[in-house]
Image (tube, rainbow, N blue to C red; front, top):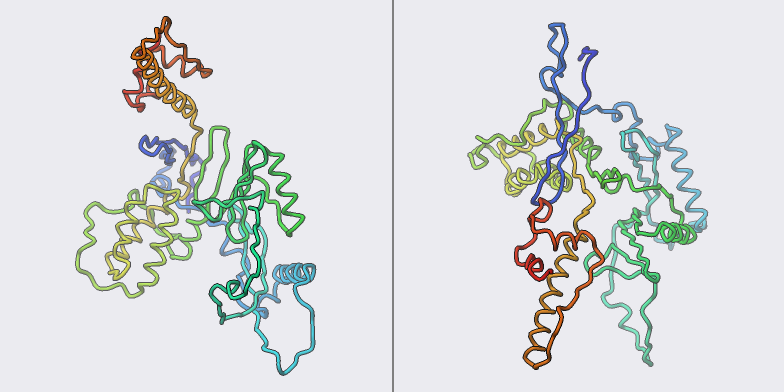
Length: 407
């Protein structure tokens, strides 16, 4: 137990990745200064995540008999039953011998907040339809006597790149809706359009407005004036619990430089566990690019993992034990509009040179130099200033010829 009353809090700094234009947050933990001789965990550089739940919450039941023992699950089942009744999902009828009765199953799940506390207990009643048939091109078997021309529906149009993304265009305003099963993200530049869309969805379906985006599919989103910080701290905490590594001793690197993954060792006795952990780590790399290379290495042996490969995964999990809150910071790109308009200015200048040369070939005199107007003060300043700045060094040199054409 750490009894040091003077432990200092963690300080966060950012390391800028120029190649991907993202900031990977790192944690610097200073060694506390005190007068006693006790060797504490903080002095030894051991920092483990705190487990707020798991051992204090009620278990997730697997049957109605188990769930009926707890008032939280009884309330969740009543809420599900009332919702099904309100939607007119079923009607109770006497059982007949000719009926093919489909079984049912209660599915229970605990929803957590970002800090690990219990948000609510969720119960779903589902039918056990294990067999299904599909008739290919069922609607094509009917004979249509006439030609029917149908206009494209207005409102949302599915994205060609992502079938789960829908785009709504009303005048010059755009609203984006991202759908995954029953989880929805709505965003757009106009808050009134977003509120209107929420009202329309609530009129058709029973939805819960969770407010600003904070958690989606294991991703924790923290909004700041300068950008967004995205991490997967809760997802990582659950992964460490399920893998039994929550209490493991942390390490400072995700893989040992002397480790040879091609060393001959006995086969790992649970290949399915190995594949499950690799897939979980692959999902974690969305916000943890610092482990992407090492996860790629261990994923190359999923067909036949050995003991040394599993030890490599445990090393990655131990590294994650000491860095549970790292993530990616997406900052606002303040130079994007300047760079885009500067490139457009150079392209337009090329066209003006071509037009002037064409007029000269046609013996049409051009008495004055053409004037190219630009309403971006940053672009005008960049075109007149011959000094290279740190934020414009990445622009190709051939675009800077616009400075030679500036009088």
